[in-house]
Length: 145
Image 1 (cartoon, rainbow, N blue to C red):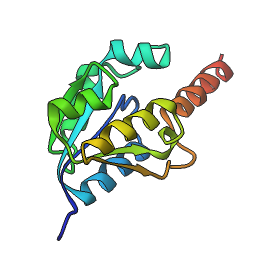
Image 2 (cartoon, rainbow, N blue to C red):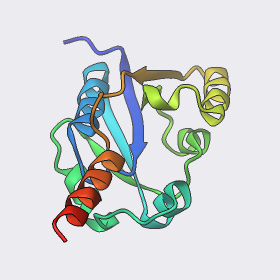
Image 3 (cartoon, rainbow, N blue to C red):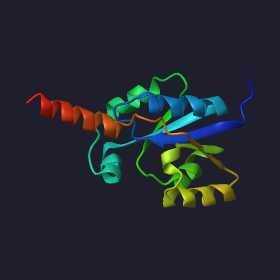
Image 4 (spheres, rainbow, N blue to C red):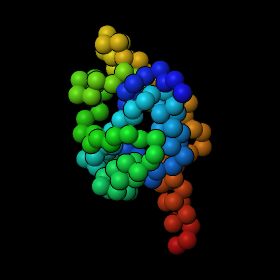
């Protein structure tokens, strides 16, 4: 099967791993021969989202490492995708469509385009997110009191 890209990269917190996470990883692997996935540290996740993930980094990285479409997993200490490119030299960056309108991704697109790197956004999986799972769980806990 022909794959357009040799090396692809995506990253995320991957807290409460769900079908949306799996969809991005599977779609990314369909387009590249070698998929590198950055998993955000607990410290970075707290900085980004204002809270520490429910699942600790050491467990989240083990989960992602054991997904068959993932070739390599790295620790993500910094969200800068251009810095990641300098270290990894990937040919394509994959993200969910929810990132497409963020100013930082517009800047990454500009920087990466100058290096010949494509940015591909996959449709967001509707109806599922770690934030929604946490919210639902909190509501269920409060109802049972």
